[in-house]
Image (cartoon, rainbow, N blue to C red; front, side, top):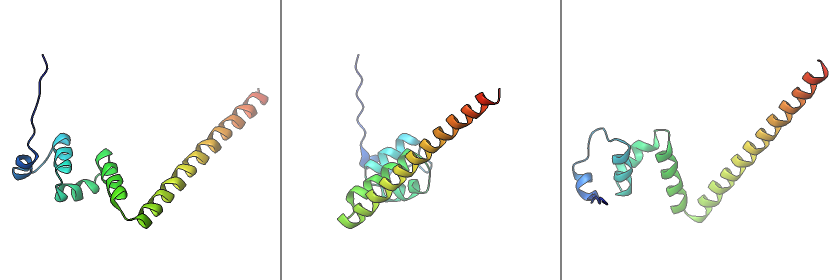
Length: 100
């Protein structure tokens, strides 16, 4: 048996709970609740990332380019740091083998 649910976002927004659980937060944000978006931008997690990406997608072209360059630089930095860590671990393992 398949169950279906109908969620009326306008009613949820009208009867907005004081402390929304994760699902209610997502629904309020999807429904365009600016107050909830601002609140969630201050928290850590997936909702914050989604809001930031939504803002990036709706930004003007220059802002989008700046954001994309920043993201590219962050990814390059993380990749280089991971490669340096692996290299350091490999060198440490070689040294450990020699000292045996």
